[in-house]
Length: 91
Image (spheres, rainbow, N blue to C red):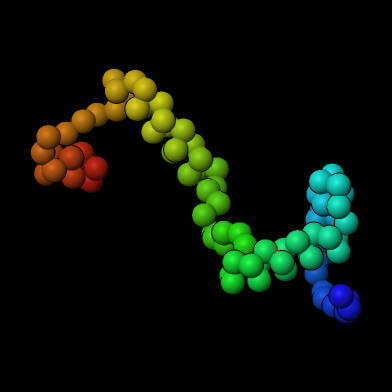
């Protein structure tokens, strides 16, 4: 199979981080991009999830708080009346 060259621009720091990662995984950049390209063609789409769902520190703390509250219901307050809940929230 014939090969071809691809030239691309990427942030220098990102390139160094990616080189370290793929090296730790036992491959080089060419192998990484070839694997990614083959998977994209096979799946007929981007072979990984693209999202902005990276929680910030405040969100991570809130998630942990909810986990703790699920284990210990006495940490939170429960309501049987939406109006009462809204009154507390707006106070």
